Length: 332
View (cartoon, rainbow, N blue to C red):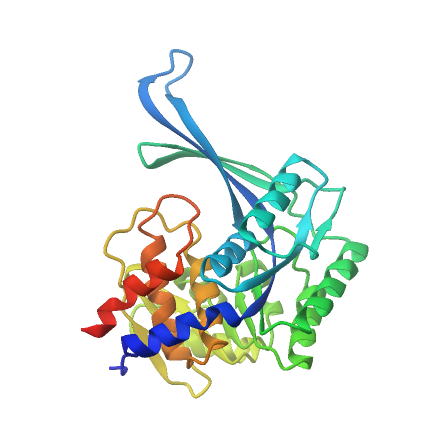
């Protein structure tokens, strides 16, 4: 049983988030939500008719990591690609609204900005429509993105890589970006997708969910021993420092570079929507690591942050006050 961080120490760490500057490299997207009610079935086809009440636009993908960093008081530098379209303009506007730096937004006019449209009725997602191009970026765009990473890392505390498998993170860009951060002595935390898994070599922390960990390691996680074996296999495969496997209602399990496994039970009381919970975890975890917390303590704080956002509908963030309120159970 791990020794739990106390509330005063957790509060001290969280209040230091404002002093951090984090670079976020990853797939940027616009999350569009259409909210409404269903009162009847369409006479044209056996589908519900959604009476639209309101629409919202949020930063999705790596943009949601940025939103979480800003909500927690940190400075954030998003780096990624957008198209030359209306969705790109909306993304720029949202980054300005949350107070993020925008110098790292690279326009690729050859592809659309990734846009996901979700129709939600009575707190239930009915359908999702995606507009995107998932083909790999070309070498010229790749060079522009890498240059933005190198420029931003000089004054940063850490690099977060947020992979949503939308074509940005080529093997070359991943390797060069990780090296650029490490050359400056900055840690790299990565939220993965299976397609690129073998290219995540030498990151300091990787945060797969249980399914991703099973697919990457080839080991079905059914008990403590198989959990350890899967995490160790990932560490060997990537020569990486630490593995944090998020496991839904089972909380999260951390295998550190000393091969010690710690499982942190979930604190979520109500789960309405897990959309973007991984973004909250990696944002909070990275801030904890760069604010004086050990990995276990940072994971406990991130676990509480995730418990807040899964109780919200849609792409969500956690504020400093919400996180501090959630951490009050550490007083008990």
